Image 1 (cartoon, protein in one colour):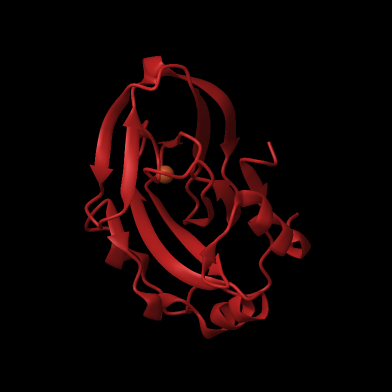
Image 2: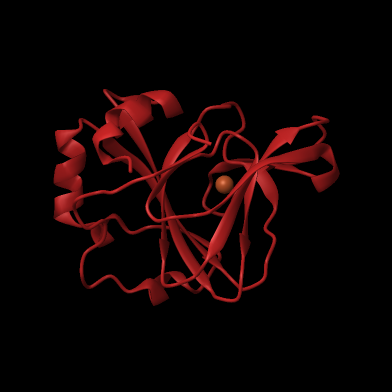
Length: 179
Ligand SMILES: [Fe+2]
């Protein structure tokens, strides 16, 4: 579904060549060190008038069905660019809320907002084996399931003229890079 997920072909490397993903294996959720991002990627963002405002890493173990959640307390539209590293296969699932009984509303260990939901209060609307990189809608309730491998992923958030974008605005800016 194009309003939840689109595959991107970004013409420059995201990370510096010397990037070491093991640095992000010590905990499930960390801030990405901005020094790990390549100069080419920053130049590409500048060309699109996008500013990176947040970058976080997730380290996932095999055969998990991670918590169903959305990445924000107040937004229902929250686009992110997401990368998955290594040869791990993971699935991202999006859900419709049937009963708005929030399981958990709070902050993650790195101070980002999230709202958790119970599986019985939501209904699956879309699943995709997540290509990398992808534009994803993180304002719709979602989760990730992993298969037999460990998984490293990085999620990034951008502003345009100091404003957060809607998924549709981000999709327009990234149109030449959507495959
Ligand atoms: Fe999320």
